[in-house]
Image (cartoon, rainbow, N blue to C red; front, side, top):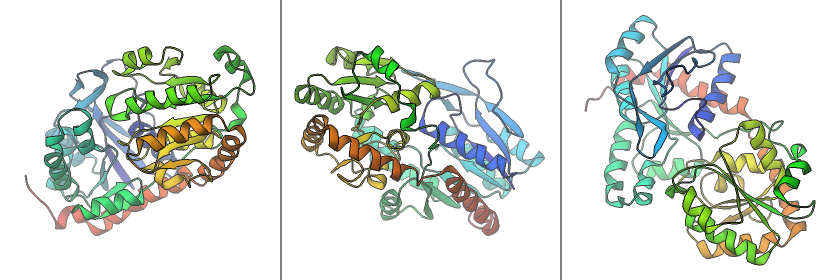
Length: 386
């Protein structure tokens, strides 16, 4: 089978979309699936070609203001039609619903190629985070039009599938995310790293990993860490990531260690060398970091949302808080920071739960969706125009 992936982000970009597509691609290539890739031209002209792709079409892209590392692909329908007429894929997977994604959908419809789409980002939720909440209904309407023209839309959680279906989205299926349990593991705990952090063997470390941006609920992260430090004065805070909110967070948490972005190998050691993971975001569609933290044996405090809702059973393998109950979130995290036996127990159970999410199973779900789309030929039977 031949599948063309259309995405505005790809490795070495550091985000959930790039990570998910990279892991699924590895699994599909191992099964003999032929993959093509369409993506924006990287900012660095010398960026190497994506591994394993039969063809790679790079199109014009623009960086997002404030996020120079994030690029939006410009429409490239003519280029894609020309390529697909030469090397026709059995199906097209569109990961992002920007200008590039829309042009890919139209090009595939013109050629009768079925399209499967992914729901990787809650763009309508971002409207509130960036002060334009009035735009959310318009964004949601536009997203619904896009996804309902596809043979299937793959979402990470059952709750999201239910919510989108209730909002008029059609043909929604669940494709979770996986974890490399041999890479994200408590076995990588490193006392030498903890020594550099200035903590002893029994001193707790609270970790956050993610982009430092408004949609990540940084104000609650700040307040939660303050409460945890009051409850446990010897608590060490480690924050991995970068973004426009970093400077303000550094001022608010002067004792915290900010690492910036780090590579995957170092990240695995950072996870394993911490004890608690705090994740207050409500903008995620999944949240790979929650699964990574759980696989690494950390007690996770998260909202009952996205991966937090799918993975965490409250007080069995983590702490799960009702969405938007900020007081309960802060109180629960502060209390847990002082209960070493409890957070150790939750961390052990968290790893057991995380290891049930394996990439080979996820990749098979992805492949099945595209095989079904090819067989149903939805792209031929239900064309639409803008």
